[in-house]
Amino acid sequence: MRGPAPGTEARFHKEMAGLYDRFAELGFRPVLLRRCVTLNGGVAAAKEFVFTPGATGLERLIDAGKPELSMEALMLRPEYRGLFTELELKEAARRLANAAPGRSRGRLQPQPTERK
Image 1 (tube, one colour):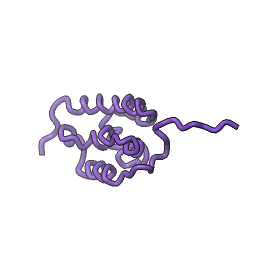
Image 2 (spheres, one colour):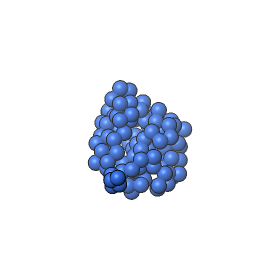
Image 3 (cartoon, helix red, strand yellow):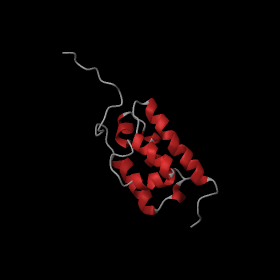
Image 4 (cartoon, helix red, strand yellow):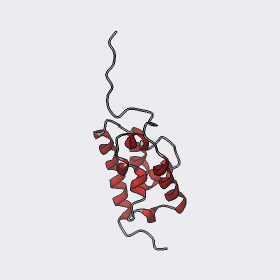
């Protein structure tokens, strides 16, 4: 099996760093994800978070109809598959397949509050 092309890890890192901004546009700011990407790099963050339920905001993206913006979808893109083990790729695919709308721990849109 051939390894990833030169520069692939740097491109993946840049895309992982950009996820925070795309999520923020949807009203969700995954600070832990951004911190891990900044401190450890995009590939290391993905390898850690793919096995950490609820850490990537996948459910929130599903709720917003934007699963293609997820870390899991990014990992599964053909140009980045070589950065991950088969187990990591299977877990990313499983998470995408099993994520269901309405399972988010938070809201993407601000909800009106009642005044008392």
